[in-house]
Length: 68
Image (cartoon, rainbow, N blue to C red; front, side, top):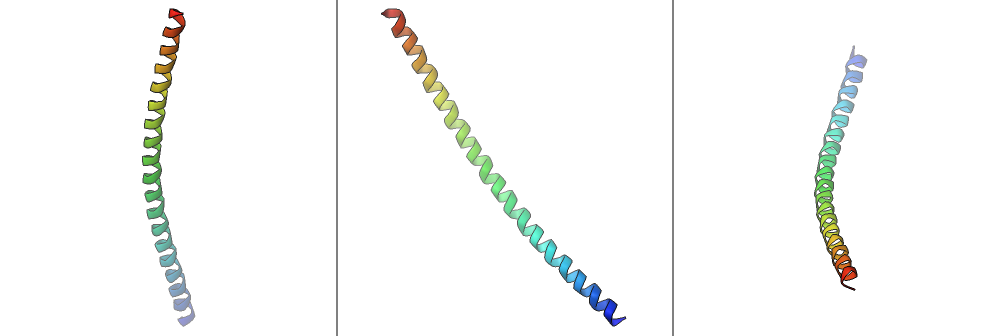
């Protein structure tokens, strides 16, 4: 009976450790996901600005082409 209790105690300790590790890992993943989401938003903003600048330059080039 003591062996069974010791084995069960060991399994419970192992499960508690795994739970703690998974909880910490989950927390880190959520933090990383937030960081990646903010980085994605910044990159999309920069992309939209670049597209706007390129469209403006193309429009100016077309205007210059027509006047020459």
